[in-house]
Length: 111
Length: 116
Image 1 (spheres, rainbow over the protein chains, first blue to last red):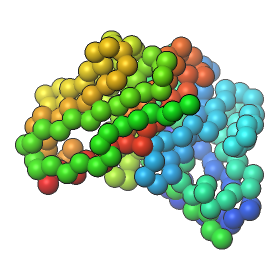
Image 2: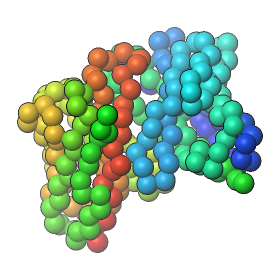
Image 3: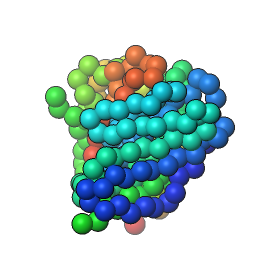
């Protein structure tokens, strides 16, 4: 699976949009981009995934660049409860569903 | 819908002792995973089951770690004997098992192991 690069930490003001970048420059055509988050003392939680097109669900939006070498997770109106570590993962859809987590981005939402 | 259940939530043991963790996946989920998460790092997959068969255990330290899912539902992960470097959170996850892009993994709260 392709390697991802994320900033170690980010801050965001409560109520503002949080934009979390992820670089996956070696991604191949059959690899999906997944985002999970992990709130303190909890297990990881699935957020969203995409292949080529931008995706939106009730939690977030995922913007994937046209060359697919990077993506951005957008939390449109961050709340204090969104403070967590956010993991960007690239996985082949036939990879036995294995997820390879990196270090993630620690997002701190501040009042 | 009940989530993934794990017990105990916390465990403290001395090195060279044995320990076991239990996981009950979401009802109907065929695939079950055990991850190890060392403080400050992302989770690392130890073993993946499909029903009661092992799909991937390439990163399981088999000299001391073992896992089973005898009836294809509950699972136990055992460490015998424990080392200091085994101190971590052990996460269990489950998924429907259909594979593909939408086979979302759901994680339990984890068991925090401290080895003294």
